[in-house]
Length: 194
Length: 127
Length: 296
Image 1 (cartoon, rainbow over the protein chains, first blue to last red):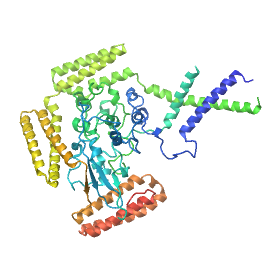
Image 2: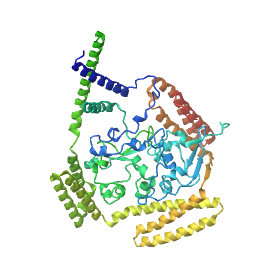
Image 3: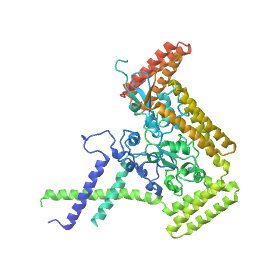
Image 4: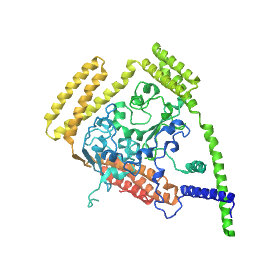
């Protein structure tokens, strides 16, 4: 017969080894043939404030703040930034951010106008949709300070965007990052073009 | 008793595993530290994502008048107390009032004013 | 009970014991750090409110304003704060802190001169006027394009009326009210633009007026790719073999760009454009040679 003490030790030992397995699995993904070896799992995105590296984890205020994952859980996904497709969330009615500080029912004026900008080379042309932008912004956010609302008046280059000008005022900071080339360069060239 | 021990173990486990978890700021979190630390307060961290869930960009960036450049607005507690900038909402009516200093002043010391989180623009090498 | 199983059991136990030791050691290392840094919540609150009352921009402004009512409020805030610091009941303390903060905010409002608070309205008005002007000129172009200048003229009349009303109010210093007129003109213009453009797609073709314009475009494209080189390959360039491969193309590209700039200096834009395009193509090759695909 095993003594009571031995049994107790066994149980404790078992528990700890199970925990150890968990620790191990968390530190290094155990199965070499598991899916998505190089893809960051969703659990590692959108860190809660206390472990995001910029909030003071010892401050009481930090613990009062909402963890992003709690807010994002039901929203449409995207591949970078907040990992949320914000325009889709408005489009399908999951989000309805207020357009007026004091009147929750005020409706924003949405402009349904696409502008296609041709670019050189095999890079797809840019489609700029006013619609998705005016669901968030007012004309005066961009016109005339960032863009002059006139054909040919705006020299936009990726260089300036990467420097945080033009589209880069928002994209790459608060709107989806410029690494998402195809969300703007979305109109492929005809196949017979060089 | 056993349950207590188990829970305690889980807490211990959490403490051990946490440091291994990769952590970085949420995309578009804004650090505001033009004045805070000089005045003995922790830097402010503004969760941009939280606010865009509730308000369209234009409410803050046109109506309230926040510039679209970190550090350019010149926010002070004085202005907030008069209902400008953050004080336009954080007045106990639209949102909790600015008595809860450490909800905003919750950054780790030494942070520089700017937009945090993953990809950024503003300068070669970052996007 | 077999001998083997016993040994296994022992092993398991000792593994367990080992794990416990490791766990407790790490906890011992971690916990004191937290204990050391964590401040009692009430002490934190006391410290934060103290900073607000004595050092914040609001407190300083009140003291510098010379406004007696404001300074009296500030003094009252400090009194409430001091009472809070001594209060033993957490709930009451919390209330007193809140009251002290509210009093300071009232003091700051009293110390704010009308001119101060007009600043923002003034700024908003100027911005709104600029946006109105921009939308109006866009509106004019749209109506020209659609051969309906009458629509634009009708809008202009409406806007002029609002502007007139705004100017009258401005002369009396009623900036906020003046702005509501400009706001109305702005919204009317915006709605008219929205109706006119609804569902349209405009094409911005890549036409250059002069070869010099096209050269500038190519220069920009070259700059862009140089930035992309840095953005996309920063990490990869630590690998010597990749760096060598990339450098061959970059050197080639640098030479071509220099030549292109030379041609442009002599106003030989056609050649300059071709050479600059070739330089950009070398940069694309450089990026691709590091294993990152980008369209050319």
